[in-house]
Length: 433
Image (cartoon, helix red, strand yellow):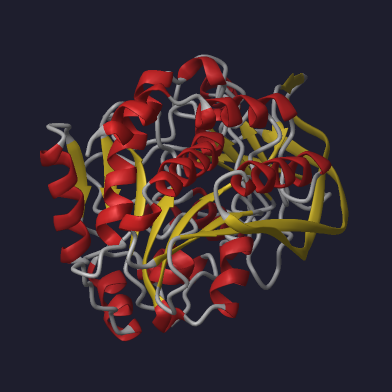
């Protein structure tokens, strides 16, 4: 039976929900907009799934105030990085280029202002996350942190600092465009620079959205995304598209519910952008032995080719390849670990999981985490094509004939070491083993 394919390709359910999300505006974790987006997602899921509800939890609230970078007699455009403390620091500007671990070695950073860009060279053996660069600066005694985009176009990057135990960072942190970063490095490297951030802190709440489809089995397949976004943009690709795709898949799976042998539990997380807070809460409360696998959607629809990070689970790789071959649609497989989205709250504990994004041909964020992450960058055609593949994948994973073994957490830890991820995770306070 293939009627569902045509229905999915012509469906407006998911795309309409994407428009709803981007039109809300600010969906920053803990904001009124994030609450509205979660409630709208609950209501959209309730049309196709059972027991749609919200789970509210407390988070560290952070609201943007003003930010300044003063260099010489100039004022350079910048924005505060979320969860930067309200502080001011003045020191010599030290340009560390990409901000790789070796760039910090044997440099006098005490009290100085560290400038790094968002890139990681293609030849480098691993991703060096923004937060790792920040905390290496903190460890080195820097007074402030300036994070420059490596994409041109005057796009100022955002992205949180802070840890689970200390959600507010230790030194003021700002983002600047590639052009401002280049200007600072050219004119002021070694000169006195002041970084000043003002932000409001409060106790806030976020919400996870839950719904279920299929039989009421003890074992479950988790279908996930995150609904929050950074406050500088619409958050269309990151991650309105993922949340909207979950809604579209719920519609498609509801029509194929009799084909599901395993319960599909939809969870749309809040507060992903500030440290995977919503997924960590869910993983702490869930019986993980009952989770067959996690399919986490974060960055879908940004390009036509789906990219599956499979975290070393061969059965997940095989399932994704089979779906791609069945529809003669290219997919990209990354078998290594990817610890930077909500699936990681489960995978680190041995639960098989995908991170599903788009293969854009670029290892960086592109428009993501900037004001340019807007709906016009996405196409309904791509969204609908990917919905077909992901519906087929979900049905395959929920079939009684599909099995995938959990990993031992110590084996996940060993894989982090082997893939050179452990050192960075220890610096950022994300090492769970």
